[in-house]
Length: 412
Image (tube, one colour):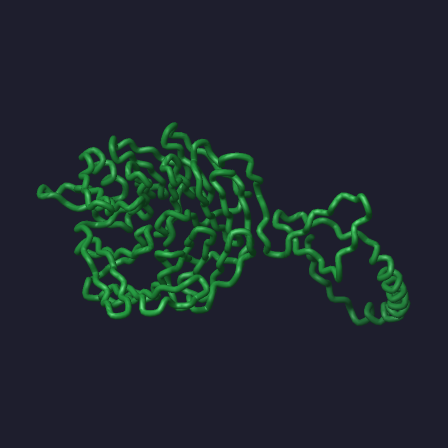
């Protein structure tokens, strides 16, 4: 409805209308008294918003007439709403597990095996955040301000405990808990201490991780198995926890620059004796190393400077079986694009749409069996099939999507 500005009347006009207003006032009072009684019988019009409106309060439910069909329960304000009923797998051969996507005002839970999609309203959260999922929960934590929400499956969003307000990032812990990484500002030489806490904010006594400032500029990244990695110019290190009577250590895992992690593997780049980029895949379970073929290294090196500056290409994720790499890379004179590179053959597939310009969260998520890559491009959820090399859109209601995560992927 268009709002029109009120026009000011002259003093003469106001005097001429004074007597008429007394008559009008008496008439309006009579109408209001009558309307109050009649209004009790008027039906409340349905909302036209795609988000269910909050139900009107009622003193007590009215008993149903004998033989009458039961009335569907109206969900309370903020309760999860089923956007798509599950009637089969979301995509052919996608397997099991959950994927979570976040818009500015909601979290979507996608059950891969059944195709069921649930939307849970949240407060307006557009700041760069941690978006982290566990077995039956997902949390949203703003980086630079207090607050955030915790969404447990099937329940309304609840405030994140204030114990996490001082943390800049949260990383998945080993037993459904989280590591809190404090915001250290812009000083890359600061010693950082991470503390383990349960989802209710209670600290796990005596369990910490320490990244020493003497390591030089570094970044902290989850390893996908409940631990935290530290990357610096000296290589990739694992932070060993400190416990009562035991001082944590910083253990070198492999030299080189970390490109991506996933499925218990690390993809690391470095230079060989001739100065060419060399890519190695490390399996952390048996310490086995595999040097990728030269054509693969050349393909990845062309994707935004892999091997020289991680910030140049942004997001990257290894498939669970370690055979493919998804990477959001810069293109000359264009926006970021999402690529899927076969680490055996070097085949490069490009998803449609533009990736995010900058985000501290991963926008890529592999299905648990490695067949499908889910990615956010143009703020929409898209799925790439590694067998057919086709890309499909996954409709979540049309809201622009900001973040994406799964229960088995590192959130970095």
